[in-house]
Image (cartoon, rainbow, N blue to C red; front, top):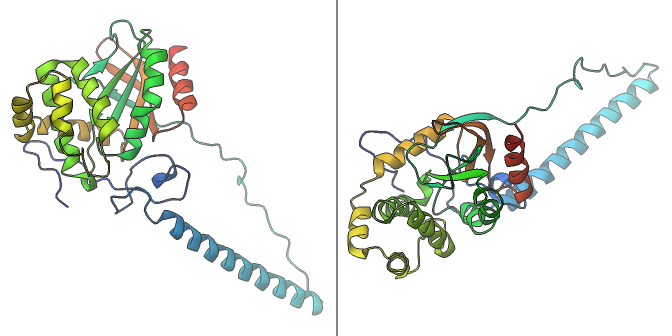
Length: 291
């Protein structure tokens, strides 16, 4: 599969998907991430996890049996069974807090009122990621209604196309930027809604004819926008988004930085990984609104 080509900015280390069993699929947290070599998120994870669990149970049983046999042998010979010594500090470790992160809104599209909002939600996303599609069709709509529409927060979209979703992921990212150039930020977000609503995900792109339908609905010139996207006019901008994301620990999509927004467009907060439940997003936004 071809890697994304750039001229002036090299893309970060390729991101693939983490295969662990969970209700959300790859990564266990609804994210296409950095250790799965398949372009099917979570493909084969349940089978692999089942064999791993069975092996662990068998190994544990053998170890327990061996320990019991040794203890009984020592007791029959008049010996003593040693008392386990507690590990010093074993119960003193504290859970780590959220990973702090600082990122700029850069020159990317922003939904909401930057001059009024106290908090920003910055998403690093892939147009072909199924979990990004899930977030855009559900959680983002609720967050927009509760925080963005009322001026409490802004939302910004930054590109992070994954190698195993190419070439469609970068093609869609270029197309979205060309729509924005032609029609503005509102058209950009309308394009995102339409694309995530129609994409077949995992690098399969839009159904035949759907791209032209979306562009016509937005009132964009189909030929000029398509030519703009084909020329990869915004490939350096996309690569910059990827490098900025990787610099703060983004390794898969969707990933978010949620935090305080300053007057210069910097967002100081924490990294949220995956299409997490709405309640977790709301709690994080409200935490920074209260500061």
